[in-house]
Picture 1 (cartoon, each protein chain N blue to C red):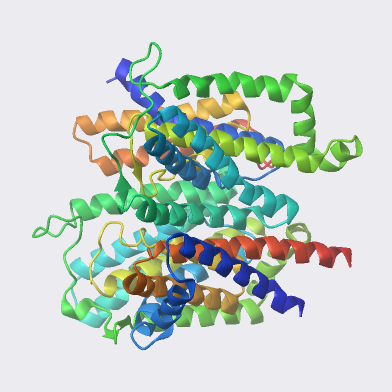
Picture 2 (cartoon, each protein chain N blue to C red):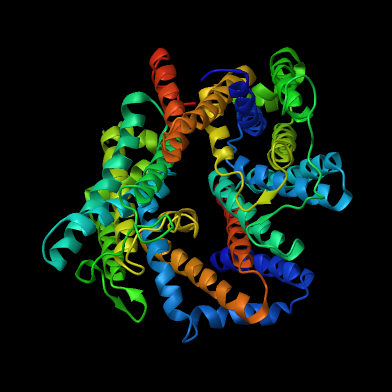
Length: 334
Length: 285
C-alpha cells in the first residue's frame, strides 16, 4: 500500500499542477495529456521516445554507477562531450575499413570519458577537492575544448555552423527505423551494470559504501581506489554515450547538440530518483524520455510549449523527494 | 592589459555570483546544503524582466525578482526541512524546473522563444562613481560586511552557526532549528533575486533561456573556496570575475573565445588545490 502511495501521490500532484498551468494558458488539460501519451507511445511517437531514451538512459546509467556508492558525478556533460569529440576525430581521421573505424571510435569515446572522469577522482583523492566540485569544474573546460575543436581544426569547411564534417558512410552506426543501433550497446552496459551490482564483490563494496561509508572504511574498503574505479566507469559510459551520439544520425558533432537537450541532468534525475538501482534507473530514464518526446507531440497538437513536460518532470521529482523523506522518517520512528 | 576597464568588467561579472555565493554561505553556516542557487538566480532574472516590463520601472522589477526567487526557494525549504527530502535531489530538480518554467513562461507570457528584450524594457542604469555599475553592485559589497557582522558579532549569527554545527545542542538551548533553516534559505532566495535582477537588468536588459549559464554553480564553488565566510566568498567570487574579465581581454589579442571561456574554471580549480595544500587534510568543506 505504502509503496503505491509513494508513487501515486506525487504523480497525481504533478498532474494537477500541470493541469493548472494548462488551464492558465487556456488549454484543455485532458487534451494536452492525451497528446503527450499518444505522442510518446503511439505508432508515430515510439521511435522518437526510443531515440531520446538512448542518450538519457545511457547518461542515467553513467551517473548511477558512482551514485550507488553515494558519490555524485556532476561532470557528465564534459565527459559526454569529450567522448563524442574523441570518437568523431577517430572516425574522421583514422584509416581502415568501416567496422574497425567504428570500434576504434567507440573505444576512443570510452577512454576519453573515463580518463577525464578519473582526473576528477584524482582531484578528490590527492588534492582534497570534493568530487562534487571537481567533476563540475572540470566539465566546463571540456565543453569549451570541444567547442574550440569543432570551430577550428575539426570544422566542416563548407558550413557556417560550428559543426564537423559528416562521417563517411562506412564509419557510422546504422539506424533501424530511426533508432541508432547504439541502443544495443547501451542495453549491454546496463546489463553488465546489473550483474556487477547484484552478483559481484565489487558491486557489494560499492553498495556498502553507499549505505554506510564509515562501516565500509572500517571493513577495509579502499575508498580512494573505489572512487577512481567508479568514476572511470562512469566517465567511460558517458563517453560511450557521446560516441554513440556522433556515430549515429546526423553523423557529426554539432556544438551544443548534446548539451541543449539536458540529457545529463535528466539522466542524473533518473538515477537519483531510482536510488541508482540499475533497472529502476533505466525505467525512470525511459519514462522521462517518453515525457519529453510526448511534449513535442503535444506542442504540435495543442500549441502548448513543449517545456511543459520539463516542468512536469521536475515537479514530479520534487514531490517524490519530499514524500520519500516523509516515508523515511515514518520508517525510522516505527 | 590591466587597467580600470578590466576591473569594471570584472565587477560586472562578479555581482550576480557574489549575491548567490553569499546566499550559499549563509545556508552552509546553518547546515543547509543549497545547490539550487542556479535555479533561484534564473527565476530572479525572469522576475526582474517581467516586473520591469509590466510596470515600466526597473526597481519594481528588482522587487519582483526578490519576491519570485524567495518564493522559489520555498521548494528547497519545504522539501528538505519540513518533508526531510534529499537536498541534492531537490536542488538538481529545482534547477531543472527553473529552466523549464522560465522557458515555458517566456513563450506563453511574452510570445517569443529563446530570448526576450524590448526597447521599452527599463534597465537599472548607472549609479555612483564607477562607470557602468548599478546600485545593486554597491549593495552586494555592503552585504559582505553586513553578513560578516551578522554571523560573527550578533547573537543571531551565533545561534545560526550553532544550528549548523551542533543542531541538537542548539535545539536543547531553545534555538528553533527549523525556523533558522527556513530563514537562511528564504534570505538566500532573496539574495539570489538581487543577483538575478543585476544579471538581467544590469549591464544588459533582456531575458534569455538559461541565461545564468552556470553562475549559480560557480557560486557553490565559491562558497567552498571561501570556506563559507562572507569575506572569503567575496575573494573567491572576485577571483572568478577577474579571470573572466581577463579572458575577455585576451580574446582581444587573438586567443580563441573557447580558451578564455575555460579560464575561470581552471583558475578556480587551481585556487582550490593551493588552498587545500595549506590546509590539513581530512576536513571536507
